[in-house]
Image 1 (tube, rainbow, N blue to C red):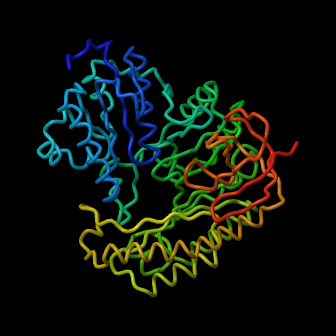
Image 2 (cartoon, rainbow, N blue to C red; image 1 turned 30 degrees about the vertical axis):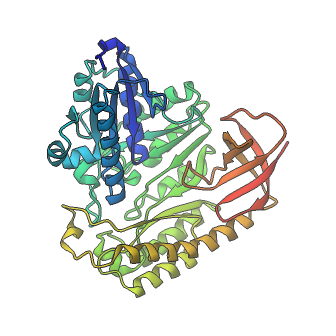
Amino acid sequence: MKARSRKGNKVNIITLGCSKNMVDSEVLSGQLAANEIDVVHENSKLDHNIVVVNTCGFIDKAKEESVNTILDQVALKQKGKLDKVYVTGCLSQRYRDDLEKEIPEVDAWFGTLELPLILQELQADYKAELLGERLLATPKHYAYLKISEGCNRTCAFCAIPLMRGKHISRPIDELVQEAELLVKKGVKEIMLIAQELTYYGLDLYKKRSLSELLYKLSTVPGLEWIRLHYAYPSKFPLELLDAMRDCDNVCNYLDMPLQHASNNMLQAMKRQITREEMETLIAAIREKVPGICLRTTLITGFPGETREDVEELKDFLRRMRFDRVGIFTYSHEENTSAYDLVDDIPAAEKEARAQEIMEVQQEISLEKNQEKVGKVFKVIVDKKEAGRYLGRTEFDSVEVDNEVVINTNKKLAIGTFVNVRISKAFDYDLEGEIVA
């Protein structure tokens, strides 16, 4: 394929991994567009000539997906269907030297904080004044807002600090300005994301400042929902619950990964908290914000995990009755402190334990959903699929939580809100009819 001129280039960005990666891709897109370079996300038309793969390096499955995606793009280049293949993101940050040797066909590799270098390679200027100017890869009615980068925690299983560096908070005024820009683009809901939300502000303001940020964001006109993802339980700032209670547009929803409930495992994972402290915290959260939706994430198969640890985790779930639970199987990651331990649980057993734990949660989820039957909820309309409208309540985040099937003969605009009376409940979804 004959190479195009700079302005004739069309760049396709493929994003793997978490929502934080998606934001990075959106920022890159905004910078390229400002340089008058044609840019698209996940382009299925294959009419682009340059690809940037934004990789994930979190766990084995994610790394495998990233490598396979890179190899797929290299194969297209070798067939003459692409001019250039570039790779950025966490996998590139962590394994760049090895990857350069193994996949020499890639034109250049970049780390997680090397946006200016990517732009330079693409003959584009980094425009610092483009605060919050992103080309959204999400539907236009919701967006992620990354409030900080990096993490100062030293959890035994986690390689994120190796790939993302130390915690760096973004200033409150800057985040409010970005939220205002997003709302002008049609965004109704923003999801606050970070490696650890509750650490926010300690580096900039010498105190935990998430509650102050929430109060400021809640005043942005047209911003209907603000949602919190990835809160850390140790030294949890309870004052942020006051903001959640005081501000009508802060969703009564909290995503707080706990990882385990056995004190043996929590200590081995270096989580800096005990089961008893977690139970006390959860009780305090529910007392301060009655009806709050609590989501957590767990890990099974950590080195040394026993049947007693698994049973304790199942007991914890039955006692705490979380609204939402996600689960990972342990991945043995180089340069983490857990890598010195023996990865002594076979992969099949890890998966079996994960399934066993999720079966406990499945019953809880069904029971909690059945409690919603007959009640009316404000629902945001996300999409139309197979002739049906699908939406979410304030207690559900994108992709990971319940969807509401909206039964109606009316035409609904995507991104609008409707009131829905729930008529049916399933393990992980709801169904209902619009009410006036």
